[in-house]
Length: 99
Length: 429
Ligand SMILES: Cc1cc2nc3c(=O)[nH]c(=O)nc-3n(C[C@H](O)[C@H](O)[C@H](O)COP(=O)(O)OP(=O)(O)OC[C@H]3O[C@@H](n4cnc5c(N)ncnc54)[C@H](O)[C@@H]3O)c2cc1C
Image 1 (tube, chains in turn purple, green):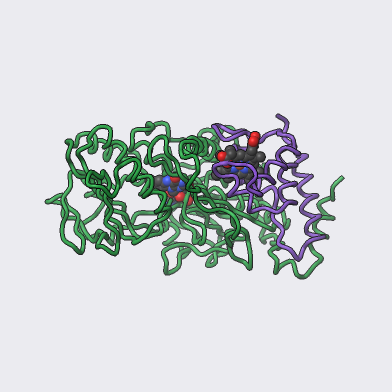
Image 2 (tube, rainbow over the protein chains, first blue to last red):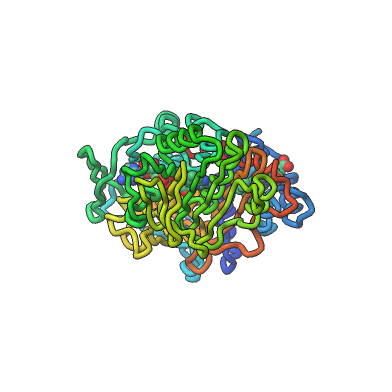
């Protein structure tokens, strides 16, 4: 619930301020991360669980993947799709889940 | 504190540029008949959509119509053929969707849609009213394009394209073949899901032959000249299966070398191409495909045989209040895949929930990844992120792509398995 409210905040903020730019739906991006990292970040396999990871860590990790500073089999290819503000919002999204 | 719903709507009502940039308010339908969503087809697309609609708004009544009691997945189907997994481990039922997520399950076939009265007629006579209908029947095999190939012939020349019994049949034929035999895989023109699946199949059948029948040969007869991740497959086949050498386990006849299978000669147990007939002990025909019957019969398809949609909501371009997702939809440049079906289901669920609550929905994005195993310890992938641009699905240019040459293939095989666990949990868990 807290997540939904926060996201609504996010969305409306975007809709108001940056409308000329294409604004992605953050919750929907996160839903797509679930496909590999597990629903709500609870992974059922070797891919790391994202649930409850510290926001700063996730943000920095994604920035590093994006800049090809951190190796990975697939994340460098995926992280390049997102802007810094999307990465920050995604990190906050996953940090909101309790471990 | 964040904004109230009213503030939110007011905010959204403001700029006129919004409709252009993809932020639309879908008006409530009249007459109002409650928040009822019916979904036809419980594959990756339909099952995931059902779960996400409930997740986003538990007050919506979601009814899932699925004609089969259990579902064997396309992904990992090749892993069963190669002996990496059991059929049981890739077969799911709908109990959790019903018991844990409150989704109404109707084990029946949807026969006809009445888009004016907004009802679906089922085979056993039940009639389901809907406010929004999601059609996700997947792809169907075509029997009109390979001369002599028919549902009966699949008993001797299996397609093994899903369907548990067909997988068991192909596997049994492989097990009983003598060492030194020939196996043929016939690959149709696109589209089919996943684009890499037939080549993964060839790899894992070769993996089996290498262990147990090393004097045998696998021939790929391919309607296509080139294929997805070709360079990575060839590199892997060279490393694992001697591709291109005299003792190659895999040989490929490309479309421009007469690789397209035009027919089958059942009595000779042979395939027919422009170059003549080729006999083999085991023949796996993967036929060309089209959208599921219900989509074709209801006028949801266009000349391509697939269903055009507006990707903002996945609403059909031909019939209002009906959304088409998964393999049945025309979603280019997204490929047909379980991952794409899952991704489309999530954005469609959001759009439908927003619409039923008279809320705006904007900024959909999607993703696809196809993992392929060339052996149990050798995985490769292709991935892409998509955004909604100019009312179309656009690839994000700087992102995605295939496994880099220097990547750790063993690790990708491990992550392929992990992906499979997570995507099936999302759909059925
Ligand atoms: C061998 C193989 C390997 C594959 N490998 C991969 C892979 O590695 N990665 C990947 O992402 N994808 C892969 N795929 C593709 C993937 O399986 C499909 O893209 C995916 O299943 C599409 O999902 P869907 O829900 O649209 O359709 P489907 O999964 O086909 O589901 C449709 C469902 O609708 C039901 N149905 C149809 N009509 C009706 C009706 N009228 N009434 C009631 N029910 C109905 C059917 O019974 C079925 O259960 C592979 C496919 C195959 C065959």
